[in-house]
Length: 152
Image (cartoon, rainbow, N blue to C red; front, top):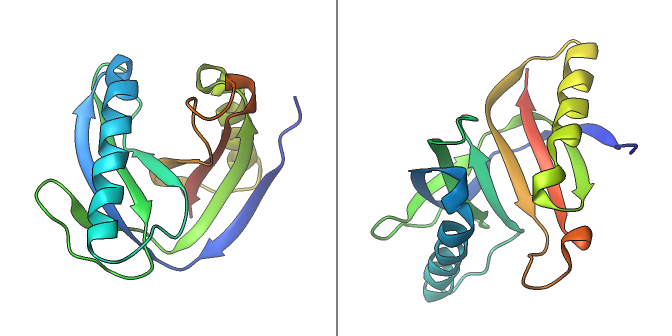
């Protein structure tokens, strides 16, 4: 499959997030509740998310994934309980829109990492996945996920 990989320079993006550590097998249970809790809090503040739900992956240890689950928001907003104010850092981002089942993403990740290396960049910090739809809305083959690497 051919992947379209692009690089853009971005401003800092305010977010509201939940941070957790979990095995990959627990992700489906954790994400749905976390997304719902965060959206509820954003709406209680009289705001709306300004983009799709995302997960920031701070490591790739499938037994102890360090995650930041959240939504981008229009401005810095206060957290509540486990929901924290955060941000996606400004800078260069290399991304690829992936279509298909989550479990079949590894080749897209490999292509992005190859592009980064071939173009003289180095990955920084977490890798983000932005989810444009969900398995509750569309068949797995139609899932749209934007994979984003921060680079220098």
